[in-house]
Amino acid sequence: MTSAELACWRLLEFLVDNPGFKLREELLLFVRPPGRSDYTDTVSVEKRSEIMSKIRGKGTKPELAVKAFLEEAGASFMYQPKIAGHPDFLVAGRTAVFVNGCFWHGCPEHYKEPKSNVEFWRAKVRRNAERQDEAITELRALGYRVFVLWEHSVRDGSFEKDLQQAVEG
Ligand SMILES: [Zn+2]
Image (cartoon, rainbow, N blue to C red; front, side, top):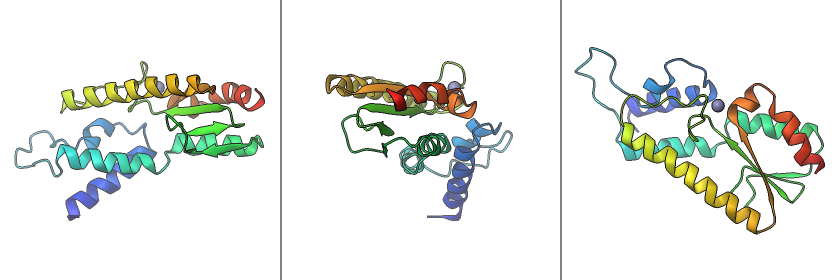
């Protein structure tokens, strides 16, 4: 890994943890700064995608907040259970819970289209949505209840009411 890639990695980790950060889109995509024509993209689209998927796999802040809530509620749950559709949580053995990132899942309130590689990101967010629809269908067919929580509902705390139902349900 080159020092530029390492710097990008650190930036990405920072940004994933700080989604309110204003330069998020620009930095996520490593676009060249305005007026710097000598600045070239440091990683390919494929590499970037690979880095993103690794970071996502680590457990994002919203997921960790949900995990903390479930622990505190004394719920019986599994984090990243190995079941169909790969939900983020399985609560009480029968409720699958997804925590959707506002960026990755194209939140109607918070998704801001990146300024470069527009087609790539559009396709990616669309694929995420399609994959989740399939996962939900599959889980329901298997008899699971499904809850989808938005990252923003985790951030403002409004998810707790919904999730409490899942815990008690
Ligand atoms: Zn949102």
